[in-house]
Image (cartoon, rainbow, N blue to C red):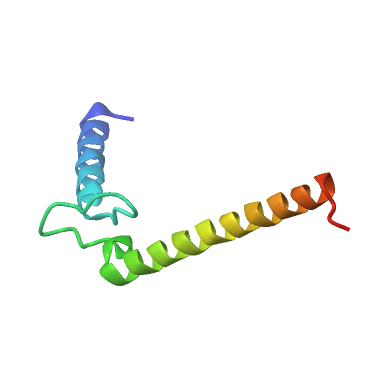
Length: 81
């Protein structure tokens, strides 16, 4: 390809990539600088509360499972019958 055509196209592609990076959604990461970014859904108070409830429920479930295993182990070691 001729350099007169290739290099300007390469420069336009680089400028396009930078522009796309400035407006592309950030996902779980930090917010983009203004005026492009928006607050990620995971940072809203409602979602934070739901995530906290889910974590606490998972911790309760793990604690209950451990207690059940301990109870079964204590019955197997010293049966009370």
